[in-house]
View 1 (cartoon, rainbow, N blue to C red):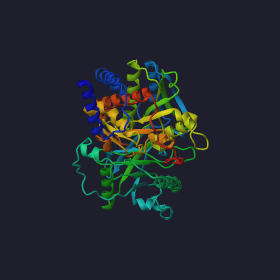
View 2 (tube, helix red, strand yellow):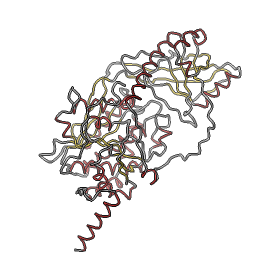
View 3 (cartoon, rainbow, N blue to C red):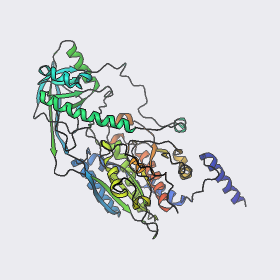
View 4 (tube, rainbow, N blue to C red):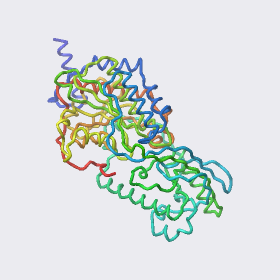
Length: 520
């Protein structure tokens, strides 16, 4: 009787601590499997090796690039070596042009020589060898005004354009180099990375305007455009691109992302009457030999005769930007989900449902990989779910950097909240405690949520994501390896628990709607 009483007290305390109602169904958690997963990861982790191959060995991973193909090929071969089933690169449809940066240099030549801190933007035009030219200043408004550009064509022809920038109040940054979420931040967490369809429509219109602008600047004879953005400070340079990769996009002018400090120095020199000349060499190779986009998939087959046709999915996006090796965004997420699959397979755990991992591509351009995967596998042509959609219990995503898992966004799914709260109970000592009903956005779980499939993104400590997100600092040495181990333990456990649960996880009603990023 004492033992029964203690168990009831423990369940009551758990319910009070997690906020679960007294009517919430008690989950039958396989804590023995959770303990095996934890012990295996902490004593024999493969995370450093996986991370090394996806970053250092593969290099930058633009969709369709040689670096992406190196990473994808390695992931498929590794999953096969582990014994996973159906490991393959799966085409999802059209992506666009391949682009490889083969050579780049930039230096100040006049009034003196000095190398500068800058990177070419992906899919930009070439300089056709070293081009030396004078720099002229334009405001962002002038550079976006086609009438102004055409009327001042004689002044900008044969020159590099530097977008003039306002001074920052100070370049000193007194924030910590990395931060973790406090209990208060977790208790009050709000929607994250939320965009509306109206905002996406504005972005689509802006990208079309940039293409038109590129055409005019090329016709005028501008040597290139340089943008020293205000957040490119303290050694951090953001490098990305919204145009140039689609088959319908013309090849534009050379475009450079420069450090804020170098840009301001050039601006001051010009404003004080000192001519400035730069020498720039961009050699990028375009190709259209294979314009498809590819996701990487692999499976652990289910063992229950009735439930093995059902799916539990997990994933993260494998593509990255060009200026570094895409470690925190998002090799980190791919490392975690691959390690989770390795753990589940190597421990000989027998999931009832099939577990499928997916490493997406084209996420940075508009969540292309997961959106098209969902359309191809789970939706009809009329935008409504097919029979396979009803067999997917859940999709779990990792794409918020290298920090520990601290909880999960329930994505407005009220029925899932008490379930996940119980699943997190064994991991409170690892700092994972929070289940928020709030939603988060701008990554691959949205594709599943749009299709009416329970799709979730984990809450993670931000660490130094502000400095590594889409920047030249996004490399292996900014990975928090111990945090990734903690994440792999929790992700593997959540996926396994979903795969052995008697019923599918509860889902929200399907609402037919335009996908948020459709058309981008």
